[in-house]
Image 1 (spheres, rainbow, N blue to C red):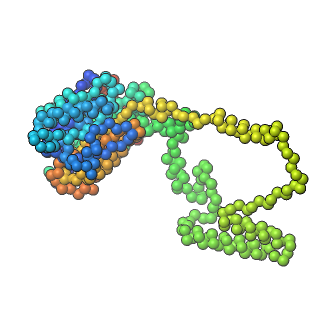
Image 2: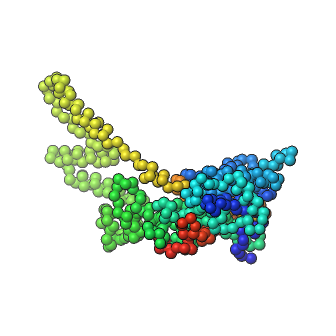
Image 3: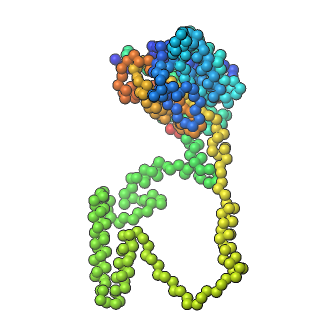
Length: 469
């Protein structure tokens, strides 16, 4: 029986719930595993907002996770996880520490959506509690502009006005034994690409009517503003690369290519190269012997010079210069004015160096004016994984991010992937990791396709794609 698409909520052992404030433009999503699941995590980028990820390290004691919270609100939104803990504790779900006390193990990550709605609003304790309650009712979970995807956007390299709306994406499949699914809130500075490599959501053109593409824009931003570079030549053109690696001696060479060979094209091994060098040394010696006679005073000096040059080339040193003749007359003592005159050039040079301090880039030029943009996800499965395997799988799943989001893992991103495995079915890890990576990629694409235009921003379904592939 082959893999078939299933509903994300059909994966046994997990409950999913959303809570959001549509007016304020933020929300959170909770994935609950009442019996606990083996957890793993991998965080990329330079600006993460996470909670309790250290618990998931392979060497640490806790082996079962009760919930993962994906939320908006940047670091403020981590507060929602406290609400999830309280609600789970009331339901007696958590790590039993004795005497009727349970401590729910709740991990989480937040994305930046403060620029979409009300920047003073974020998921809090109450919203986290509501998300857990919704996980236990019919219709408490939806894709698109819900939960952590409420304020999610992409294509923000040129600011919010040229961005596009994305949301919460899901994808799941199973074969009657293994079940695996992914939930992801797609929020990136870059663009979302479909399986064919086409942009489906991202940076829009200046008039806002079409998708322009972030990669195309970045091609003209490689240098800081002290260098003027034509946009068409900012990156190496693919045609130039193809020409550089495929030309022959009968073809035109790329500009700037230095050809020092007059021989026919051939493959030269290291052994051939050593033989050629050896033959060249022997020819040099023979020619020197024929051209010089040690008994002839006219040729003896050239012979000595040639021998000196050969020695210097082999030793890698320059020949010692002949000493300059020393005048027999004693040097006259310099006056104080003459001493000052000789020292003046060095002082002038030092002064010139001090007048040219190294220029520092501004925060805007370094990109710090771009808001934090974090895609956060959780893969859920009934596979039997160890804690080390869950962490390794979380790392592998970033391949899905790289396929579907470009660029990804920037210095202000905090892209985070959680893995929760309930341990019901044995799997071939490498084969399962390949399947899970596809599942994560499709969930990211769904995050763009399931979103609706909102907060003044269009979604993928509203746009015509004219951007780069």
